[in-house]
Amino acid sequence: MTYTTTSQIRKQKRMKIIDVVGAVIVKDGRIYASQRGYGEFKDGWEFPGGKVEANETSQDALKREIEEELDTVIEVGESIGQVEYDYPKFTLHMKLFICSILKGDLTMLEAEDERWLTLETLDSVEWLPADVAALDLVRKYFSNK
Image (cartoon, rainbow, N blue to C red; front, side, top):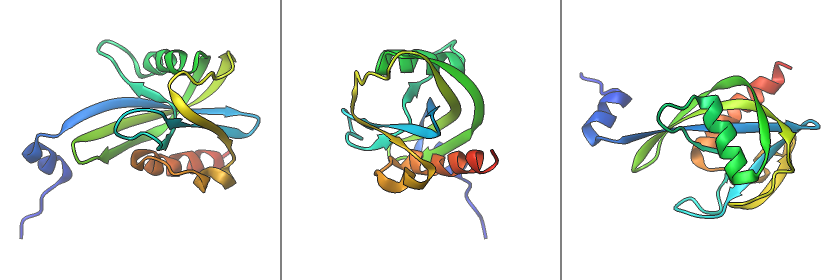
């Protein structure tokens, strides 16, 4: 019997891999979530962030994305892990970082809605599939604190 690995399937399908970063912004024991206001995944909830550009570190990409999307300067803290999720048309590779606000008020420039959630209320919104997988990393991080 022959087994096919996920990477072999991707090669067969020639799936595009998109590298993104997500900010787990923490303030007063709560975690920030935003609802997408555009695109194919409009209305889904996510950790804010975005694509990593060429010649850009994950941390620099996250700072840039949060400033562009939320008009806020953040401090990027420790990485809590990464998630790989196969959407029908691409594979998303997302690195997550614990972040704090240095300057700004998280002004929604692209998002449709926002919420500050506790660990107990994380499941109160409909997360995008890759972000659902990221919730395990968030819970694990805070359970060790």
